[in-house]
Length: 433
Image 1 (cartoon, rainbow, N blue to C red):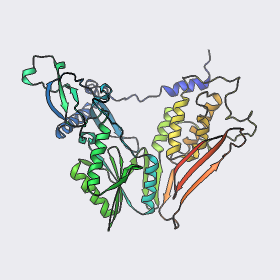
Image 2: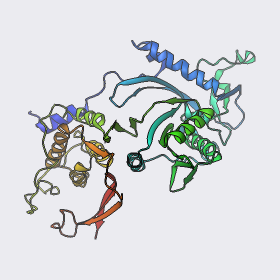
Image 3: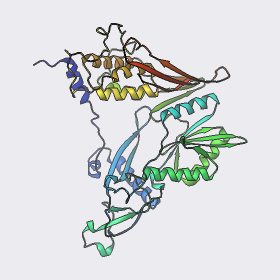
Image 4: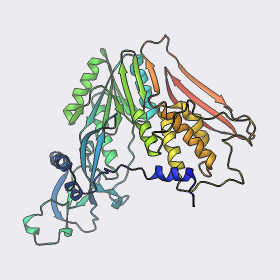
């Protein structure tokens, strides 16, 4: 039986994996060629746990207490070029065993989104501000827990002398600080950081709780928080004061000028800033087996006003729906993320193809491959934000209706495009009946 090329392609794309996957345990680490680097990462994690006084004494597990489990997690951090920059080991709590209302109450923790970050980049270029990225080392370990939590005694921890002959499962260790994996850890870290910044006179707003601002006679500084990444934007003097203030309370790594954050690559030059996702685009192309495909010059083919001839029409009665072996939804998700962040040029075609996610056909999968071939030839495309722009600067908001869809009866669209300086902040569309 001859397998159709589309299904053969999709199956091949689905099994493309990184052969050098991350280890799942310390035992697996010891069997790898890069064990010395994992060993250093494990030791660094243990040193951090001890330095932050995360664990209390090992005690018999109190009655009616359900100690959480633990697990080692290993990852290799990569830079904007997808190169391994460091090895990272984390001892995490298995938060899935926590009981709501007993082991935790609130869990929500805000994070900065790409819309806000893109606007701040535009602001930095417009006002000729400095940009600097700092990373808080083991940030979650600074959080102060709001409930009593016990954890099973991790391997390698010595039991008290009096407990050596008793089952290890009878004992647990009380957590003094939040630990990665706990449901409330992100919230505890944000609360600690927020309290520290507000105490120094920084202000923020509930609408954008991850952006802190402080003004002075000499300038101002902005701290844009994304979990443990601190994006500092401001005038030179105030930015340095902010960096020094953060270092007094938290152990931090100064990464210099912001080059990579929230999946966005940022290239600085004398003419301005280029924001792109070439590394992510190349990973997407490789994932779907299109990294060596012939590039195309447009993200979609020309459509026809005759709906029966339109290649982007819904599934016909005589057409088959693609099976699960075709990664249609995965491709849509990857392309939507790219379109929303730095590639509005593929937004229309991707959103159009996303409409058929529940019943995609060969035609729609061909449309996906067309977008991927277009990306193949434009991997380094993104937002270019020039330094010298005419004044006054304006905030332009445009609402556009029925974009290329007015010929489809009872299926109009309301489009929205928000433009700030040279940078699109947000674009969206919704049904309008």
